Amino acid sequence: MRKLNKIVVLLMLGMAAAFQALGQSPAGSKTAAPVAASHEAGAASKLTFDAASVRPSSRKYVGIGMDFLDPVSDEAPPKGGLFSWNVPFISLVDFAYDLRSPQVRGSVRGSLPKWAQEEWYTVEARAEGNPTRAEVRQMVRSLLEERFQFSGHAVTREGQVYALVVTKPGLGLKPHTEGAPCTLPLPQSKIDEYPHTYPSYSSYAAHCGVFNRELSRNERRLEMLNVTMQQIADSIGGDLPLPVVDRSGLAGRYDAVLDFGLEMVAAPSAGASDEWAGEPLPLALEKQLGLKLVKQKAQVDVFVIEHIAMPSEN
Image 1 (cartoon, rainbow, N blue to C red):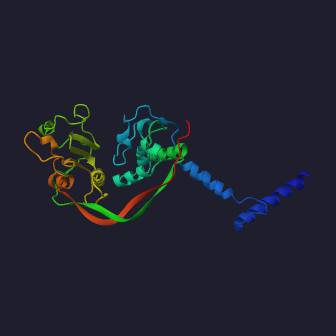
Image 2 (image 1 turned 90 degrees about the horizontal axis):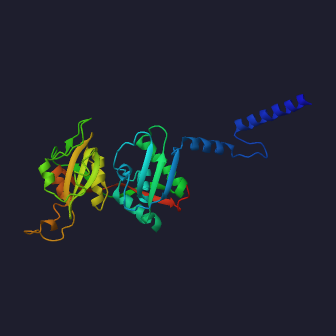
Image 3 (image 1 turned 180 degrees about the vertical axis):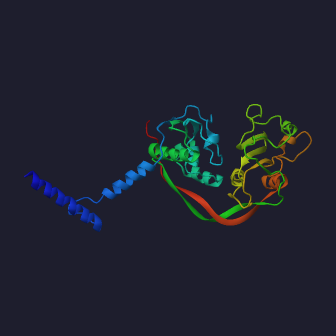
């Protein structure tokens, strides 16, 4: 009897193999097995934190980790894979989906439900080893998918952009030597002209990457140290109505400092210099960095949110 059962089993295995070779399934069997196998393969390649805690923040407006989560930054993850952030929800989305254009970020924020626009979250996460920045980005995306049921996708369409081109090579735009420290390519006396700088240089020194500093009520300084030209384009785009794309043709990494004014609130006069906003950004770009913005048509990114929900418990 056992020998007969063995023959039956062998016959069934042979039939299954034959059906598989023909791309068919025996009658009464389920055809979902290949899909399940594919899903398991996809899940295996999906990067996630080994442990993560997400909770509404009790310290709104106290940013922790925002420099790292800024898509324009290229700051490396801390050694050891330990992360501690206190940020608005939109900062997690911007980083996870690498949303560099300020216009795209603004559009995404405006399409979020009210709670997601306003809520800040404290995130404590751990990843084994020393993950790369790109790997951490995938982990944050997985975190959004699991805790917030978040999904979205990018599409492109034709639109207006500002192309960043070079008009005067070498003017204020200095190549950054590999391995060199990130310091301001300006004399200290220039910094001292702005005693009300926020944050001050004594409390927050210049560093590699992109940093926006307030010089006075109506004037800003963009410090862009050891960055690519696309990072410069992305950085200045936040103060313009259109996205900025790099058309400079310059490779490598650069140091650049740009002082520019916001909207002028009063004509300059003696004793009222604080009311003067300084040079508008396009003019400052040309005079200080030898760069120019030219309006063009190009393919621009649009990000569509498909689903979002209040976060699940830890």
